Image 1 (cartoon, rainbow, N blue to C red):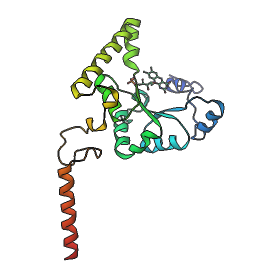
Image 2 (cartoon, rainbow, N blue to C red):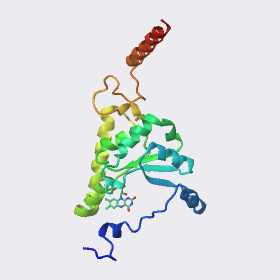
Image 3 (cartoon, protein in one colour):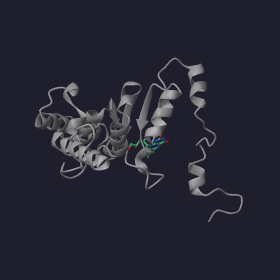
Image 4 (cartoon, protein in one colour):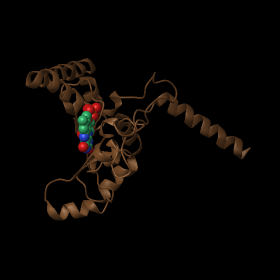
Length: 204
Ligand SMILES: Cc1cc2nc3c(=O)[nH]c(=O)nc-3n(C[C@H](O)[C@H](O)[C@H](O)COP(=O)(O)O)c2cc1C
């Protein structure tokens, strides 16, 4: 056990993390490079907006593999939220995502929702650990096959053909369980009818 002056294991391994980072640090980094600045580890729509405001060119929606905070949101959910709530931000900053990307379908979903790229960590790490370079090549080959198959199955010939409408919430697209970017015309008409009835009731 760690004595009074010794650090615990978790304190030791987090010792390299800066505890005084602020949004103004992006301006500081900008003073020292002309390269694009990409902020990794963003977990909310509001923080994507702040990345835009502070002049970052890219953002990686990521919980760093979910290894520090068990209940951190899944990056694909944050991507979906961003598409739902702030689709305008996709043209103001390059959005990328990592964490939990395990299949070609995961890659296709992320691209369809508007991600420019995905990152893959542990599948590559583990393949390298057990099979070295051949293992890494095999992982990439499997992903390529799965990406091709998924795109073929949904009728997308190129990445440009991928659209948010191809990705929806979990479960059947019934009633209100639909993304707002893919409205149901029949449901919209019913809602307009209900509104109109409400207006008439108020006048009566
Ligand atoms: C062993 C290990 C160490 C990591 N160290 C860091 C780190 O120091 N800084 C960081 O931003 N992300 C770190 N990550 C997170 C990865 O950069 C990446 O976000 C994550 O692995 C992607 O998720 P995935 O492994 O589910 O594909 C680490 C991940 C692993 C597995």
